[in-house]
Length: 97
Image (cartoon, rainbow, N blue to C red; front, side, top):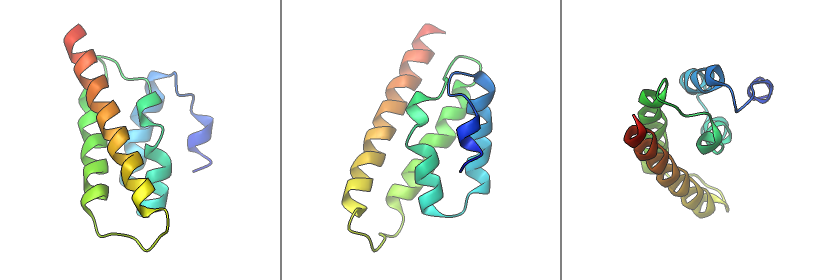
């Protein structure tokens, strides 16, 4: 996850890389760590088509088997919040273009 920290959130290419990273990560913890800042990624008309991959990945994590963690419920709330924010971003970008 240290690699992700070198990509600026304000760059178009970073969003593309983050979406690609999702495919390489296998642990739930690593995915959640990557996805929690996804509403801050640069979403524009050039890459908004990728947002559905992020929304789908979050939906899969939410619908997956529960984890044995004291923070599980908090994580679900956070992931649902992220999903809602991404859907708002998707609608806003699509309305502009």
